[in-house]
Length: 314
Image (spheres, rainbow, N blue to C red):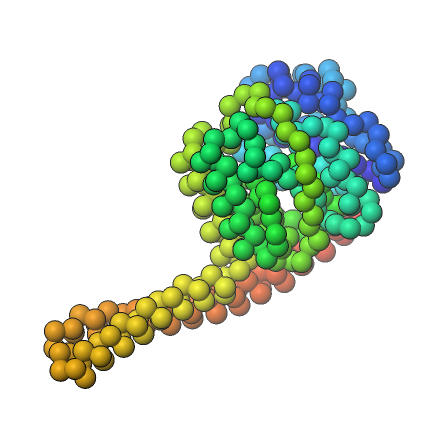
C-alpha cells in the first residue's frame, strides 16, 4: 500500500525543513511513503529547499492560486503517482508528523475512507476565545449540512483513500476543508475524526488575514456547498419559514377582521399575501434545484468513471 504525504506550500522555505523532518518514514500496513510538495507560486526558495530535502515529487503552479487549488492539484498528482492513501498536512509544521499514524490507521483497518485530525478547537490555547467559539459554531453548521458529526471542520490534517479522492470535487477558491466534508456526508462516505496534537503558530495565517475575512469567506463556502449538495433542505426551510410567517400574519388579520377592526390592518393582509407567494416560489425553486442536483450527481458519477478509467489506463 502506497502512501503519499502532500504539503501545499507558499513561501515556506523557512518552515519546510522542520515539517519534512517531522514526517514518518515507516508506518504499519504501509509499504512505501513518498512526499509531494505543491508549490503555489512561491517567490522564495521553497522549490530549491524541497529538492535539497530529498522530496520525492514537486508540483509547481505557475502563480499563486490559493490553498483550495493547490490541494486539488496535489490530490490529482497523488492519484497519477499511484497513491492508495493521500495525507494532506500543512507546511508550517502546525501538526505533529507522528500523528499521521493515527490518521492512516482507520483506513488501513478498512474503517473509513476519510480521516480528519481533530485539533480540539475549543481548547487550543493560541486561539482567541472568539475564534474558539466561531470554530465550534462553524463545525456545528457543517455537521448539519453534511449530516455527520464534525468536531473540527477546518482541519486540513486528513487522510483520504484513492476511492474518496476520485469522488472528490474542489470547487471553492478559498479552502477545501468545509466543502469536501459536505460532499462526503452527502455521498455517505465513511468519515472518522481522530484527536491530533498541534504546535504553536510559526507564522501568521495566510488563509485568513483577520476574523472578519475568515467569517465572510467561510460563510460563502458553507452557503454555496449547502446549496449545491442539500438544495431541497435549504430552500424548503426558507420557503416554509416564509409560509409560516405569512400564515401567522393572516390569522392575526382574521382575528381583527372578525373583531370588527379589520380595516386598520390591511397592511398585514398585504404582507401575508407577499410572504405566502414568496414562500411557495422558494419551495418551487428548491424542487428545481433538487432536480438540477440529481443531474449533477449523474455527471459526477460519469466524471468519477472517466477519471478512474484514465488512471487505470495509465
